[in-house]
Image (cartoon, rainbow, N blue to C red; front, side):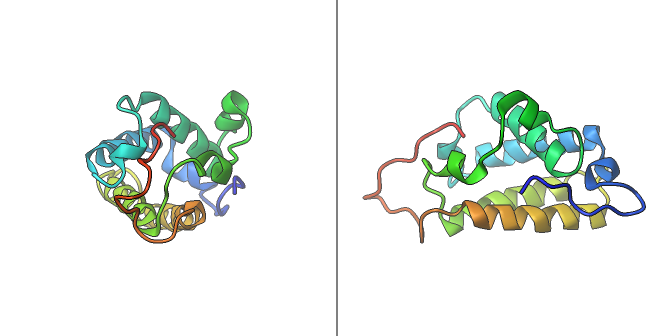
Length: 145
């Protein structure tokens, strides 16, 4: 899941979006995650390292330098997310936060935003590890992706 997305005459999706817009997107995204009651309990209070890891992952995922691999090793996305209760509803909430962040990052062209959103939709679906919404009887989610 870390192969670069489509190569077009404009280069990789990373080339088309650019590092500054990608960083702005990630920071905006985590501000929405922190405000979402379905997602905030899954994350640490201080989201700086989480955002740094997400930016490093997306950089390589979109065709830029393999920053995540260099700093943290193989992403092992599914394995790293297994300790957390990720329901279809939470995956959709995550994707909704990303859609809002993409919409609110005008320096990302609409066609690039659509391509990125579609790719991340597949990733979000892949991360689901619990059917249906978590119930009150379920143990509280762990914090700190």
